[in-house]
Image (cartoon, rainbow, N blue to C red):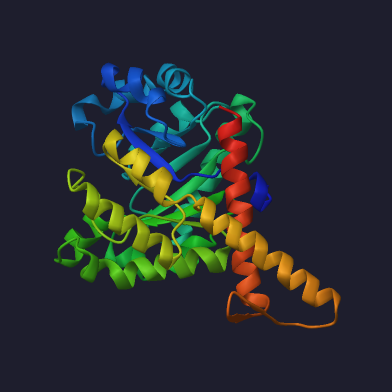
Length: 300
């Protein structure tokens, strides 16, 4: 069931959309996000959750018209999670965003349920991937085990707002830096994608502050993030896309190293700096990422 890295979903930007607000659903495909998250959790009132889950199938068709992947954020109480999963798993839904994961066992339980629902609905086994959300101190204690708990995991994120509330802190970069770094490390060790930014997603009106946060988050190893307002989507797409200068430098660096390697050397001077394998591997990731982005955009 484990997908190859180049087959896994690839998201720079993920836009939350309340599934029960028709005007937001209707416009979502125009926003340019790599994925649309149809939300059944925080943006849906408790009394409306049963009705909201019945809207997912039609909404998935609408929001995917621009080529975005469809993700559904389900609810945390197990009785709601079971009903959500039974209702929304389909060939049109690429992944489930799973809030407040508190252990590897929790994820394995959900994996077992999704296995059964895929089989019942005739969906290819393993099609439905997981984005695990760690949002509590209790869950954070097991973040490394959570990251590697199931082959369905494709990404890991730390929900800054909920996490800060749970620890009695504020969702600012200083408070979130350590837990966010652990999210990156746990995801990388498990071979999945770290998603998020080092800071709050709530202040979407501070464009320059948000842009700086994205730049810093990419430097720390994050590859994309969710957002709650469409104005942030272009910032995420730009911030998590290597620039033309970066790609050019990376390609020239790889070429210089390959030439040196062919001549029997394991390092070479490039633009006044000594480069060797780890540096070239980083350059190769830049080139590979740019190619994946170009391929994705070409398919839209």
